[in-house]
Length: 282
Length: 260
Image 1 (cartoon, rainbow over the protein chains, first blue to last red):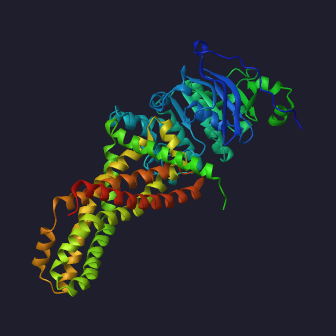
Image 2: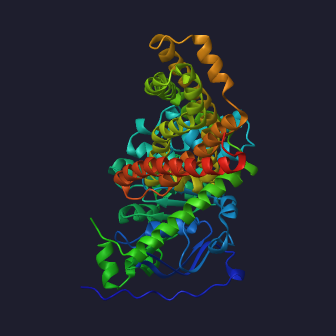
């Protein structure tokens, strides 16, 4: 039995020094029906970095993504996204901010009455100032990124689970958001499809330098991301040369019982002596 | 069945009323805000209006026919069978047309709205919509509210007319009343107060159907079972609301216009 979780020390930041970080959680707590899900969570997501969030089921990983988008409000603490305090913003103002943030939901959350084309184009159609030709070009571009151009006129129910996740990624990236939030994008998928999704996330990280938070239960996915980079010439993910591990913008954050017990890179994670963390990564 | 304390029940009821009021208020306030979803309104108008036409036609026709059948025996006793047109006309236009059309549309569309929006809630599609920068109240609730109000108004007129046709068919074919006599008495008895009362109600009922259906859909919790529960509650609540509002609206209109 490992020791009870102890939250790691995090410096409290003011609004003045949040600029290098695209997301800042400052002492955030939230409870649902008196069950504490997050208890004083603090972390920062630097620009261009991908941070993988781990933890057993119910530790509040998906809640962190919803909090970052302002879909739910914390009971305590402050959350800054692109310098804006989302905890104090009105829903009307949040819609503007959310246009700079893309999210891939756990079960894709594609609109089941719309075709793939309409799903991917949804945000652009809502913005309304894009011509038909431009819309078509950008939809095809986003779908070609996930290699699903041929599914344009299909409905989500006609796609496999992996294809739905890829369409969800296309929908999230169509406006080239500054931040991407992935909620278990590989959950429940076979290893081959999972690797395809991981490759897309790595491609987004390395080619477009998008900052992202990645919720996952699969440690191996995050380790692949930490040990691989995207090679534009061969248009695929390749392992990092020996000795360069840790040089990709990839970090790990582990939650336990609503607290952050680890926040660091792959090297620090591998060297951690915490019994729970060692058990978790073994 | 789990027992809940009276305090908890009162708190939940007040909270539900507050949430419903906010949703209903927002759906009206959004009429004055951009963007306006015309395509969604047209689609909903087609679903609600054209889709409900067969059931409204049947309900209107047979209600008028039954009204004529039931009242004929009483009128015959007093030798006043010629008044049947007046009775069917006033009954349909003032009360039965709006209420029965409202109840039919509530059964068909409040449940449809609750199940559609409820499914979207449990599959995170509403969250996805918010995450994509779109206000679900503007995109989903307001178009449904406008379409229901607009279409229920015309459905009620159709129902009234079909009720008169039903009454006319019974009067002429079964009781041998002259068709011209039936229609002229049915037409001449109507005054402004009748028509106004009969046409203000569908506006209120349409608003109730859409907002109650959307409210239960948007507050669905607990997977498919929760969606089913929301659907049932939407039909029950909207039907009860319609009957309650009908009573108070009638009382109010009578106090304004006086008895006929």
